[in-house]
Each structure stands twice: as C-alpha cells, then as structure tokens.
Length: 268
Image (cartoon, rainbow, N blue to C red; front, side, top):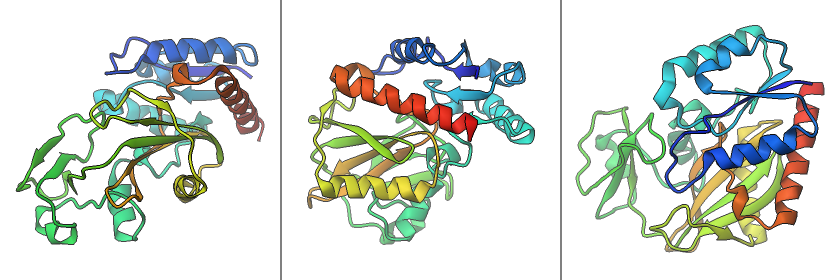
C-alpha cells in the first residue's frame, strides 16, 4: 500500500514548522506503509507511479501554485486516484464560498458577505476585516471602517473583539484534541484546551456538514464577546496540526487514528 506524501518541507510558515511536522509524521507512517515524499509541484507527474493513494499534507496555500494544483486535482479526479483528504471537501478545499453559504443558512460563523452593498446584512461594527476570497494565511487581509472593494472578489466580516481562538482537530469524524491561543495577538502560540460538550457539539456540527468520510480536518473558531463560538475557518485541505505541542499520549493517539483512517480509505 504505497503512499505518495505531498509536502513542502521548506515552506516558511509563520509561527509553524511545517517541515518538522511532516518529518515526524512520515517517520511514523513508514512503520505501516511504503512511502515517498514529493513537492506539490511534482505530485501530478508522480501520482501514476504505482501509488495506492496521494496524501496531501503541509504543502502551503495552494494560491502560491494555483495552476499546478488545479491541474493535479483535475488529473486525479479524471484518473480516479484516491487523494487524502478526498477532493469532495466543502470547506477551504473548495474556496471561501462556504463562509457566505453558512452565514446565509444561519450557522454560527463570523457573519460574512462579499459585496459592500450588503453591509447592512452584517452586525454593526466600527471596523471590518476585508480579505481576498482566494486568500490564505491572512494574505491581503486589511481592516477598514468603510469597505470599498470589488463585489464578489473579497470577503467582508465585522471585526470582532474575540477573547481567544480555538482549534478542534478531527480524523474522519473522530475528535482527537483541541488547542487554543490565549492571546488573540499570538495566533500560533497554542496550548491544550479542554472542550466542553457544547464546544464539541459546535465543532462536530461543521464536521457533519462537510460530509467527508475520511480525512484530517481542523475547525477554527473564536470566542465572541457574547460567549458563543463562531466559525473562523473549516480547514479540510492541508491543516497544520501543531503535533509538537501535544502531550506524547495524545500525539500517539492521533497517529494511531490516522493510520487506521488511511488503511480504511485505501482498502474501502
């Protein structure tokens, strides 16, 4: 059951060590699978070379190589190549439209529109976050009291004075652990978080909505001034996992769950 593991070990992620995480994960996966690593720009050319599945991990925002990713995705779908996470994700994998859809359907997300003419649909705010619809990693994010951007090209959200951000990590539909950033200004200085039953119900609601049978997903949320959690992002393409911050038993439990998921994914 050979795997092609797609990663960019040299990607300079702010506050994260992509390479270290994937070196650790591949060292553990090699105990169970024959495995080869490749850069995302090489994935399409290499995937026909006898691999049972392609595993996409810490490969950076695809906007940096959008054309190559789109070509890889089309080729994988045409050939029926198993890709983990499956390419049917409805979250970040498919772009940011889901934030608009979830807002319109009344889900607990940061209210989002994509047209300044629709500002009245958002809660009143002194300032708004404006970011490219195809953005990632806060690239192009600005704050302004008067959004004036091209309709349909940017996301517009009220700037929320949240208490903290928290992330919930799942393998398939199984919750693994949660981490949070006590200081809102330091997004990647994370510590373990003990979720309440209500927190888990919130996060699981988005996992259920996404309908992925297999894969790693991260539900990012913020604690609003009212006390409720609001979705910030549903990362279902290549979520960074912050495995180095976990107690060893939790990290081992995650690896065990991932191995079981991959075996189930490939063997059906």
